[in-house]
Structure formats: structure tokens, C-alpha cells
Length: 345
Ligand SMILES: NC(=O)N[C@@H](CC(=O)O)C(=O)O
Ligand SMILES: [Zn+2]
Ligand SMILES: [Zn+2]
Image (cartoon, rainbow, N blue to C red; front, side):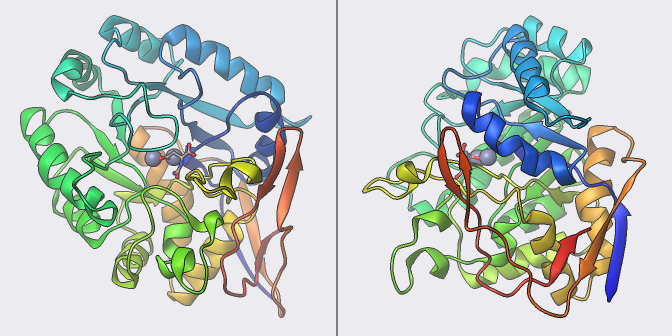
């Protein structure tokens, strides 16, 4: 039996939703992770300090008995966001980061930003106080092919923004392309990226080959195999600028299995098992701690967790439930399409 012990991991990009869905999905994350950066794309979104305080309380109240899981809150950037309120939220420890959604880019992003000029004051304040901007990095121009939207965002939005405001710390969320990897690697400072578990395991064939599979549809959409390989190389390199953000994004199955299914993959229950599998395949189990437990806290200026988890490798593949039942509906769990031998003890 092979085992590996790593500092308890954190999830630097997580959707918990609210109400019955929150109650249904939070235990899966709290079981393995000490902390998670909570995405603010509720309807209506978490915009103000007061919104974040109230949402944080609802998350704490939904924790399973005995859990000391800590939500790290973010604020949803809108063109009406008040820079002063953002700074207050940061100084008070209520919000750790601000999230930029280009309007229309992804699930619940309608209140996002259309013109970056309208949020420059907020971003300048953030640069001054050292608050991180997390970005969903895709353009929304309908002329741009959906598989090119991350690359075009980097060239036409992110690069100019970083030139204009080099002091701003930016997390480019859930990168999916070799161009994203290369751009982060080339940056000298103030740029890091999260990588999801599913983008390390599937390419776009999972969605489209042999039938259309809505549970593999997320945004940014999975790309060609060469991009998956670039992401695997980055994640397993130990490079401090790459770390885990699962982007576990639960939706009621009825909303996924529909003529216009929504974007999001729910991976919270088996993410650590899948990651150990990936790192073993890449002969990089010694880098799993950096990716899942160390690089994220270093970037956000937090200490790593003091306790540890142990992953155990079985002789036979481990199984996970196909879906979890919540009072807000059934949610299908990410199926990695390959045998996975690892389990958190
Ligand atoms: N990743 C997704 O496909 N969906 C996320 C939103 C996001 O992170 O873009 C969601 O909220 O469902
Ligand atoms: Zn996103
Ligand atoms: Zn997300």
C-alpha cells in the first residue's frame, strides 16, 4: 500500500451557491479542505462588504457539525462597485479578493464588467492596499470562437491591464490553454493562476466525441489535448505561480441535462483522489503538496495549514457516487473517465 501525506489542502476557487444547494455541497469540500476562496456569483451577486459578511455567515451556519472549514470571501466586481467599500471589506478581513467577470462570460455573470475603464478606480485602490483581483479570463465577443476566448482575453485585455496597472496582483482563474501557462510563466511578478482538476484530466473530446456529454461542459471550455498536457506540466512543476482552484461548480442535473445546459463541473467529492492520480501519472507526487497545499497560501500571504491529510493508493480502482442528492436537486459528480486508485484516508 502506497500512502502520501501532505499539508491539508485549500481550494482557491470554489462555488458553494446558497440555501439548500450550499447545505448539500459544502460537506464534500469541508471533508478534505481547510479553506476555500468562495466565488461571489450568486443571484443577486455578492457585491458589497455587507453582502460578503452575510454570505459568510450563511456558509458558516451550513458547515457540518465539528467542521472548522474557513470560507475566504470574494466580492463580485460591478461597474457600480464602491472602491471605499472594497477597501473596508479587505481591511476588516471580510473579503480577501475581488472577482472580475466580463459581463456574459459565464454562469451568473450578467452583472459583470462591460468596460474596464469603469472599474479602474477600484482596481487602483486594490493595487494600493495589496488586494488580489481574481479574473475569469475570457472575452465575450460573439465573433471570437469559444475555444479562442481565453487566448484573446490574455492578448487584448489582460496584457494591457497589467501594463497599465503593474502593481495589481492578479489571479488568472482556471486557465485552460498553453498560452495561459506561457503567459503566467513569462510574467515577472504579480501574476498567478489557478488550475482545475478536470482540466488536468479531460480534453474537449470528453464533451463532444461519441455523444454530447453536458456534465463535462464548463467554462472556460476544455480545449485540445496539447493544452491539457501544458496544464499538467505547469501543475506538476512545483512553480509557485500555479495552484489548485477546483472550480467545483454544482448545478441541479435538470439544468445541465437540458437543450441549453449550463456551464459547471462538480468535482468537490473526488478532487483530491483525481489529483493524486494525475500527479502519480506524471511521476510528480512529490509536487502535489506544492500545488494543493503550499503555493496558494504563499500567493495570498497566508500560512499553510498545520494539519495534514493522507492519501492512500489501492490495488483496485476506487469508486465514487455518480451523483449526490441535495434538497435543491441531484448533482452529478465529475467522472474522470480513467481509473483512479487514490483515496483520502
Ligand atoms: N466554471 C463554470 O463553468 N461555471 C461556474 C462559473 C465560472 O467559474 O466561470 C459556475 O458558477 O457554474
Ligand atoms: Zn469562471
Ligand atoms: Zn468558477
